[in-house]
Image 1 (spheres, rainbow, N blue to C red):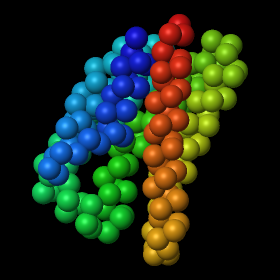
Image 2: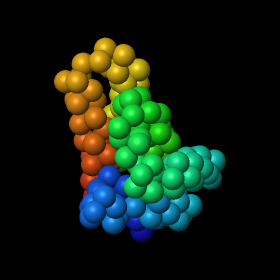
Image 3: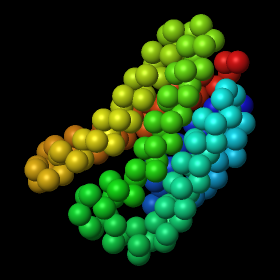
Image 4: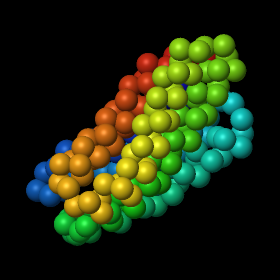
Amino acid sequence: MPLRQIGVGLLVVVLGIRVAGFDLLIDPIGWLLVIGASQRIGGDPGTRARVTTAAVVAFLVSLPLAVPPLARRVADADPSVAWALSLPQIAVVLLLAMHLSSTAREGHDPDAAAWWRWARTGAIVVALAPVVVYPSGSLELIGVTLFLGLLTMLFTVGLLLRHAGRP
């Protein structure tokens, strides 16, 4: 069930269990799960290749960030640095949501298609909001933007796990 594996992989990426400054659930492990499963999702081979390619880029970006001193430097940097580094992750969610919405629509499942369109919209908002919010310097708006990013990831994971058993 590739959707379940992708969901678990994204959950590993979202969750952080820190011990002495080291994340026990390092993001590259989650991205390897996503890469492996994304090659087995149904539908258009071109779309599958785009999702897999975005996951590979997210994996490559996550590798240096698994090193605690580098992760701390990014965390201490301007929020726009973390946003830029999260774009491949957002691209995976966006491409996956678009693909699964289309697949659900073709399979005559309008409810599932609608839920995946919400995930797609969330990914678009999360990708674009920092362009407007970060220059304002408003800590409240930056916090809301970060919360929307987390919410979008968790929403996507929930959909993946819920739809994992569907054909």
